Amino acid sequence: MASIQELKDLCSQTRRDIVRMVHAVNSGHPGGSLGCTEYFIALYNHIMTHNPKNFTMDGINEDVFFLSNGHISPVFYSTLARAGYFDVDELNTFRKINSRLQGHPTTHEGLPGVRIASGSLGQGMSVAIGTAEAKKLNNDDKLVYTLHGDGELQEGQIWEAAMYASAKKVDNLISAIDLNGQQIDGSTDDVLPMGSIKGKFEAFGWDVLEIADGNDIEQVITGLENAKSRTGKGKPVCILLKTEMGAGIDFMMGTHKWHGVAPNDEQLGMALEQLPETIGDY
Image (cartoon, rainbow, N blue to C red; front, side, top):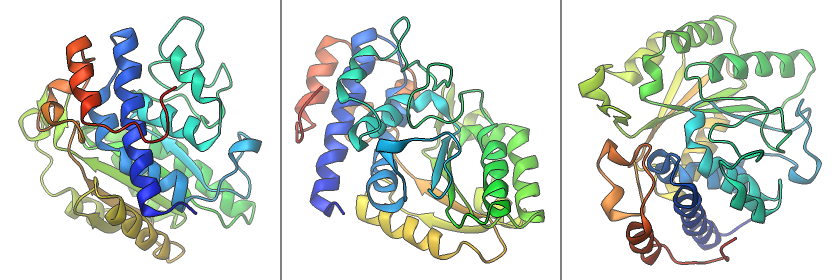
C-alpha cells in the first residue's frame, strides 16, 4: 500500500496529466478534475479492492466505481492509467479522433476501467444501484462507489434513485458528492440554490458523512474508510466531499470559469511550475 507521501506525489503527477491533456487539444474540463484528484487517488490506490490487470465489465468479487459526472474524464483517465489499467502513453490520445479516451467516458472502444458511458448527468446513481443489487444477489460482498457533481443534484433522476436506494436498503453503495459550489454557468447558489444537501440526503434515508477538506489526501482516506465502516447497516452511504474547483493551481481556484476551458501555452507553463513532476510525464 502506498505511503501518504507517495499518494501526494501521485496527486501532483495526476494534476500535471490533467492540464497537459486538455491543453494538447484545447478542449476538456480541468476545473472539476483538479478538484477531485485526491478522491480518485485515494479511492484507486488505497481504498478499493480492484484488479487493473484483469479488468472485467461485471466486476465480480471486486469493488466497482462509476463516474456519473463524466465531463471530469481527465482525472479519471489519468487515475486509471497510473493505476495500471492501460499504458500511460495513451493519455496522449485524449479527445482525438478514434481515441478510446473521449471527452466523456464511453464503452464501445473497450477502455479498461470504464463500465458505463457517462456525462448525461443524473444517471450514474441509478446504474450504481443496479450493480449494488446485483452484487447482493450474487452474494458478492464488495462495494459500489459513485461520484457526482453538486450541480448534478439539480437533475431529478438523482432523487428518484436516492429514494429507491434507501427504500430497498442498498447498503453496499457509497456515493460521493463533489461540493465545490461551482457549475458551468456560475456558482450553484446562483444557478439553482439547493439548500442543505446533507439535510436532503438524510431526509431521503441515507447515512451522510462529510469530508471538510476534500483536497487533503489524509482527510479523504479517513472519510472513505469511515464510509466503508458504515456499509452493511441498512442504509446507502453519502459522502459530502468539500473541494476547491481547480485545486493545486492558484489561478484556476475559486471560480467556475475553468469548468470547461483549457489553458493556453502561457497558462500551462504557469500551472506546471506549481505542480512538481514526481513520477514522470507521459
